[in-house]
Length: 120
Image (cartoon, rainbow, N blue to C red; front, side, top):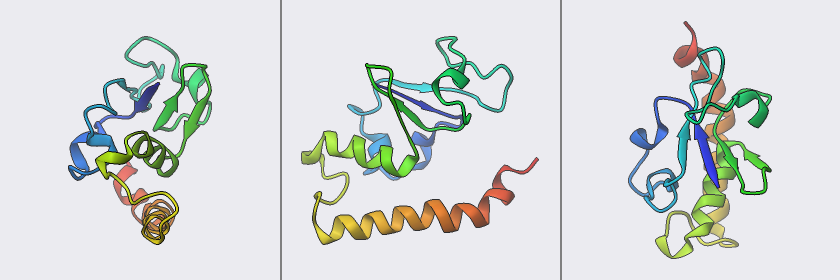
């Protein structure tokens, strides 16, 4: 698996317990600066072939399929190491509260603050 992100690397800005920070999970982290043209990965691959929507993060599996959306990727990566306790246990009420917060952040907060953070 390979995880493509955009600079600045989100690993630096998330809490220690975040799946992004877990050393075993970020061993194949590859940054792609989608603000530059052409949109090349560190390996020289045109990012549009990985995700035509040109946004990150993208988790690329060994078979070439991809998973997009940070909320889905965070949970997938954390579920790879359930003993690490990175997210609440799958199927627990706490897990669904966790998902509710992730979705709130991704939809409501992102919508409000994106123009402030990403406008030139």
